[in-house]
Image 1 (cartoon, rainbow, N blue to C red):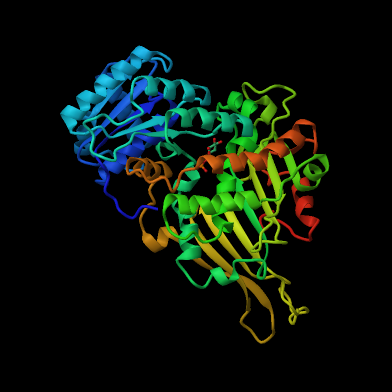
Image 2: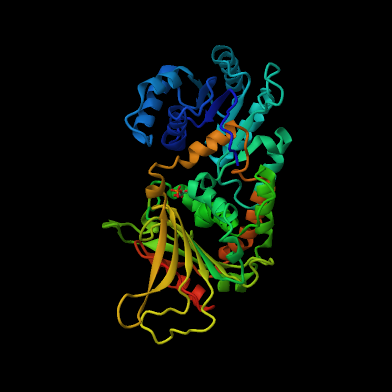
Length: 504
Ligand code: BG6
């Protein structure tokens, strides 16, 4: 993980520049990097998209997006003006070779005018089907290699959005095709959860302290819960969800990354490959859930029905636009997982993710083992297992340690309390957005927070057999009311081993 902020001169080329991600996250992210003086002095931006636009129209459109979506408002006009000068637009279809010639010329012009010296970061903010044609055309136009004028060691980087493939086979094929045109070190597979401050902090918490690590294993932890709940529904993405489902949208990537960060072994260094080696080892240690019976015992899938979320009445999934009336696509998934390795043998890891739950909360709970001898068994409030470490990824970012205390008074009563660390109050400043961090890392060629080819394949290797059982109807798709905490089957999943979700 980078500690050095130096970024080499470069041009960021955004494919799909008129899309939602570019508008809401990427351009505001670049602006905020500029505002915090983190961009190199020699910098350029190229927007590449299908719509016809002049450079000035592109700049005006981007300004509006930044004004609307930047986390710092109002925008600083000096910073914006400087950025706007470095912005140009290329109109083209992703599979149109002539457009890449135009792109190549613009890049050369920027090298001359802005001193960007052949540094290139291509951000593919495009549907999965457009990734291959873009890389093929970049390659044909000679843009997968640095220009001769570039300093020694410069190499273009290509950032690829998730989902990377739709299953193991397609991910392998995509890796193979990309690696025919690019080296692995040039491919930055993004998973924006890794750019979140609190996710990065998991490693600092574990490996930058001595007090936690001795407890971080099967001797002390009884079970782990990982929750990635959202209150939002489809937000116009019904078509995408019908083709994707929650398992591919959230679990295959974000949730498995959280699992890796919380359970992996200490890497030997912060070098990108050292960290990723450990994550791959963890993914490979996941006990496969293969076959109908295993899927029935260890997984729950469900779909939301109508209900009330944060005071508003909302539709069920099947009433969302572009969703089939009989859709079998899941918007909720819960898994009972096991890592077959020395550290975690026998410790269940319960993972759940969903749309349209009561509220947005991403949280990891490490629940400690029960007391060896329940001395306070008869004392009011005493719990068999009072201790937990709660890692709040978002919102209300922080870490809480739960333990039992005596309630002051002349009799003995016990209550669970928490020591609570909150980012907001401890640091008093807002954390950067995940995309800012990841854009910056790609510009400085640091791949630590990006997914490697074998890592993405290991994720699919785990997920594929579960999806296969689900396709066969095992377990059956259940339902949950919007605004609830999910289906009752998810409670039963934990009850098998005598556990329950710490949140309902
Ligand atoms: C995206 C998913 O990758 O992550 C969305 O496609 C989801 O469905 C989003 O809403 C959640 O991200 P965050 O940062 O809001 O937790």
